[in-house]
Length: 292
Image 1 (cartoon, rainbow, N blue to C red):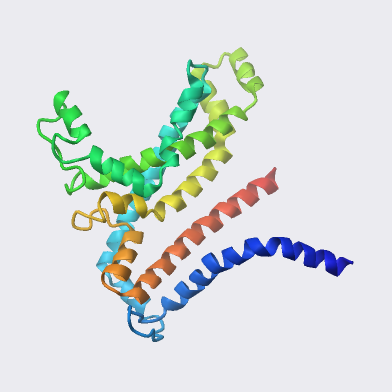
Image 2: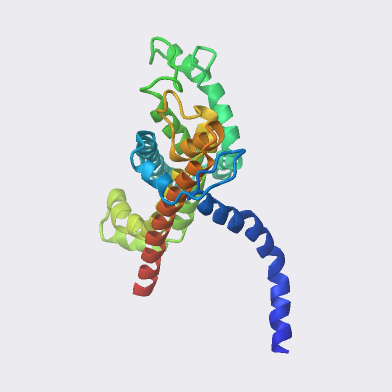
């Protein structure tokens, strides 16, 4: 009977495991293997050991993409948390049409990254036909239109701002849930002790959100580091590699130059980086749960 029960449970789980195995495990294992080969499209892969990784250490384009990737990741993650917290505080307040604001904030989240990128491409058109340039010139903030996505000075800050906008919904919703889980009695007690709004924020709100903030920062950092679709739709890594994130660099090596083995090696390095961040996050979570 016990064996039949186990087989029955396996029969229920198997339909879900097969797609995961086919779409996740096999590509991951294949990618790890190809990272140790000189594979190019149209040729049979040949094992070359650590040659790809040794070459990577001296590849200035690799280090440049990682530097840009970390600038992008830190900037976008910090903006998503700071602006997301401000938005969550507003949504948590008793304002008119609060329900409508909560619906509208989810609009960017409902859009695929490519669609967001195409939409912002139209908003950021480099002449006065672009809504942003038109508005800023009409207000007298800028004297002439700015080529936001093809200017060496403006391209990276611009995509960081677009990235912040795209991730605001998730950060705001999670932080809003955290705010609503803080007992109101703590605010009442702090008010009776004479604590003002700022003191309540520092000593009640922030400590109450600490675990939520750690979780969302860790997850957003990993997701932002692996960003591809949004930035590809906006700049394709330009101008001159100024916005070439690690995933874009791997894509170019694999699909533009045909160096599939080297691209797989780059992917393996990114998997290691994200795995290290995930391990740090999980260890912190388990340590906090154990402490509780």
